[in-house]
Amino acid sequence: MKKLSLLALTLTVLIAPVCSYAQQTQMTVTKTETAGTISQVNPDTLVIRSESSPNPVVYTYTKKTNYINERGEPVSMETVKSGLPVTVYYTSNGNQMIADKVMVHETTTTRTAKPIMEENKSSTTTTTTGNPVFGEKKTSTTTTTSKTN
Image (cartoon, rainbow, N blue to C red; front, side, top):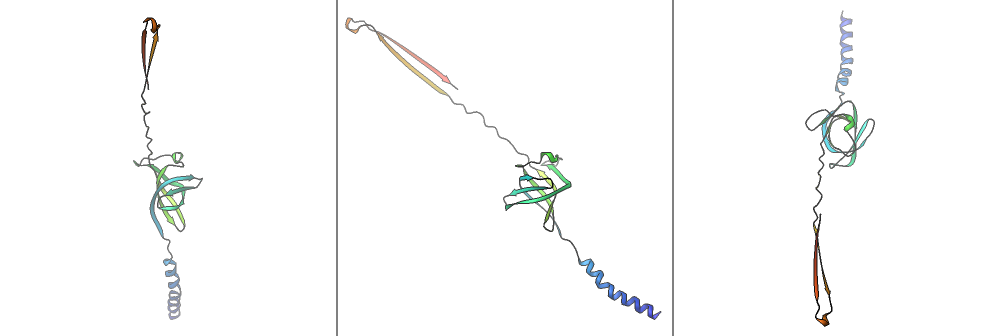
């Protein structure tokens, strides 16, 4: 019985450090977000340019990545295109950034009305006929005004 107890104690002393070492190994996962403009959409990645980073940042997306609009409504992946402003909510796992959610910001197109250009043209023609030596003088004045938009 003493030999069995001594063996159990020895195994406990030898195995305890191994178990505590295995429990100390952990992976650091950070969740964060960034806003920018999509510069490329590839089969498994989105390339985003933002004001906060001088270089484009690559985010991996998966089948679990959700795509929403600003109201939180789902949008299809087909609407995610180059040039769109987005916010990417992602998880960092080592050097890889995995997109959990991509919020597509609505773009507004402002139409400017055609400027109204008004041009007034006026011409006056004076015609004098007759012979002034004999006192014949006939003057005719024609004024034409046109307006163009």
